[in-house]
Amino acid sequence: MNNIPFFRPAVCFSIALWVGTASPAFAQDAPYEGKMLRLAEVLGSLHYLRNLCGEAGSEWRDRMDAIVTAEKPSEAERVRLISSFNHGYRVFNDNYTRCTPSALAAIDRYMKEGEDLSNEIISRYGN
Image 1 (cartoon, helix red, strand yellow):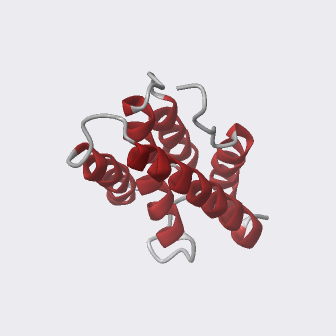
Image 2 (cartoon, rainbow, N blue to C red):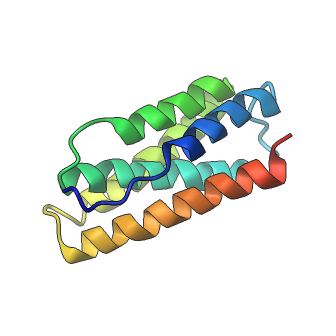
C-alpha cells in the first residue's frame, strides 16, 4: 500500500553507524541493551506487518542485519537480538492473516516507536 509511512532510512542508517562505533561489542550490561532489544522486536513486527499490508521485500530484516553486522555482537548477544526480532515477527504472524485497519494502526504505532527508540539511543548513548 502506498499510504504506509516509512521509517526514516536515515535514522536506521544512523543507528547502524552508531552501533558500529559506540562499542566494540554489544555489552550484556550496556545501558542501551534493553532499547536495542526492543528496537529489534519493533523491526521484526514491521517486517511482518509491512509485508502483510503490501510492502513486499526484506527492508526491515535488512535493517536488522545491518545493525547486527555493525555491532559485531558475541554469539549470545547476537542470539538475543535475533530472538527479539523473531518474537516481534511471530506475535503478529500468529494474530494477523490479512491487512486490517488494526494492522495498519499497529504499523503506525511501531513506526513511531522505532523512530523514537532510534533517536533516543543515538542522542543518549551516541558519541
